Length: 311
Image 1 (cartoon, one colour):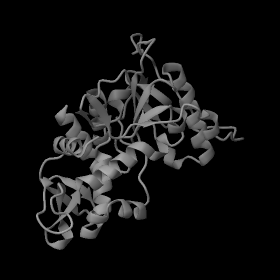
Image 2 (cartoon, rainbow, N blue to C red; image 1 turned 30 degrees about the vertical axis):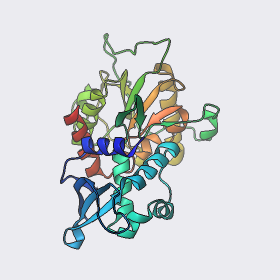
Image 3 (tube, rainbow, N blue to C red; image 1 turned 90 degrees about the vertical axis):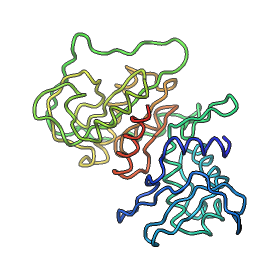
Image 4 (cartoon, helix red, strand yellow; image 1 turned 90 degrees about the horizontal axis):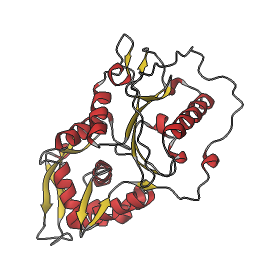
């Protein structure tokens, strides 16, 4: 990917005045200029992303695109961010300018996940992680002696006669979106797509549909893997309250359900799910992306709504 391609992606993703990063204190570091070229100093002549630091009375800070591109390439290649000290070494000019540049740069790169830009006829995907084909899936899962899953009785979901089934393709891979369940639910039995009523779930589902995937499933703490048109009862259960052993048993069940409906080695999986829901699943698939990895709750909502609006 080139610096120009990266700048074009950011220009499509953000509008002037949008928050590039929101601190733990709720302070927004907002975009000032897509392409600012300083005329003096160490950044002279270098195209930069310029943003405003709220805690310093509106002082403008800059990140050269050449340094931002290094971080984006590292994240694309390794599927994670380098350490704080590595980022500072990777971005000496931006860090010399200050202004919380490490967190701003990481937030921008993370927001690029799933965005593509055509550059010279080649499509560059900023954050798609492809695992090694030789990796042993079983090596990522430790067998447990725990005998029982979560103690609450489970009522099997009802599958309508016209339940959605994935088209089987003999060649090429399918795109599968996985969304985690949420606490806020309807009070009566309903289809999966109507049972979860939080703003985050609705936005995640809208974004998932905008991706035009081959399949969308919900990761339910109670039922495991659910299709959107399955009918279930409301429940109160979350993986956060499960023990480590129970979490692994849940993940084992979901992997078995996924294997029945998808191809874990050929299909591409998009995780719109929190760490608790995806940590034991990611090692079991060969190709995946996590568009909202490391984004705060507010950043996730803004990302989802922006993507849906642009689709």
